[in-house]
Image 1 (cartoon, each protein chain N blue to C red):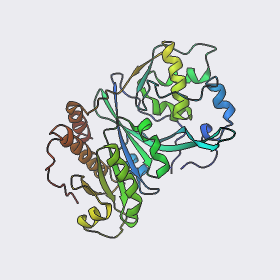
Image 2: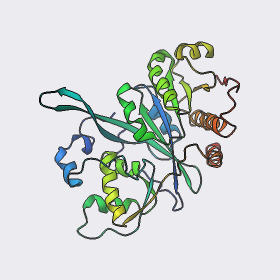
Image 3: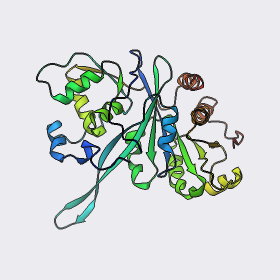
Image 4: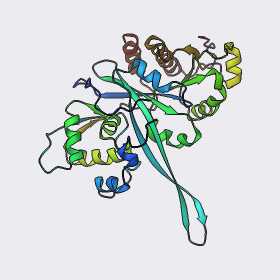
Length: 119
Length: 208
């Protein structure tokens, strides 16, 4: 895995993470965001915006998965979800959640197979 | 292992709207990241999730409760399947301490690849047991490290593997081989759900 010092989320003082989220430490089990929810910016960054929020808006000009946003921000997934929830609540991003059902949709599975075979 | 530090290129198309997950699980050094890299359209990225689990009271008099914080780091890559579907591949550790995160992190996963090093078969028992309990469809892929060349039946027996679970050899460094593993998994999922879980008498899949 990564050497020491490679990851702010792990190595920075916890204070930084605390400040980022206003002290909230959990996205909660009811977070609407999945690891692979695709996030799309609905507006441009504005001056004075929290820098992480601005960074998210810049990187989600095209659909971008939650896990990619976390990796790029170098923040744990849970913290990233909190930031995303703020932006979603403010209408600044939209979320395309995975079409999850109890059982996989055969039509989707066929599309996956076609896509993989075409690689 | 690589530590990705900058934005992967290749943004998704504007119409992408359905993220799918496949998890590659296995012991340390078994080739999870290698397999992700073989088929991913982006350089594998790394991120982590931290979870806190309330534990049992350690001191009844003070009411202090222990909390266990677990941090799991995982690699992932991406395959754009078509204009709407995007498949994310996650390389996840197989150790015991990882599994309480499974539901939270990998809920809704299409299925899993258990990557096995035949020199360390025992490392895979726990992962297979947990996947079976979770009801997650999976295939077992033997990454070729030049280890002992066991017969498939021996591997099945060593892993106590259900006869319906596909078992195949692979070379995690090879794009074609990694592709074949993923296709085998999705075909297995398809057979299990689409052709009817009602048919328990499906033939054993021997792909080795």
